[in-house]
Length: 88
Image 1 (cartoon, rainbow, N blue to C red):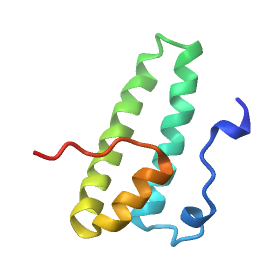
Image 2: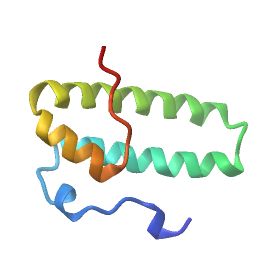
Image 3: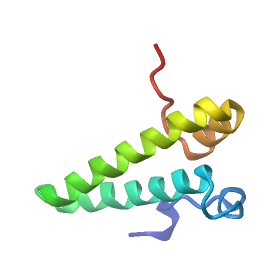
């Protein structure tokens, strides 16, 4: 897998290691790696279950970030290129 396909954002990786933003950043990188893995291993159902768990964790962290700091949430979603949460 080419290194360029991973998301490299210096501003996010420089923040505190345990912050919500850095956790979302790391989970997004893992999601990118797994989706690339599924292009060649389409029937790897064990890894699909792990991907669903990672997606759920990222979704919960994004919801928390949206409640606590909407400005940081908007910046992060635009930098990572992920869709925003559905708000009713």
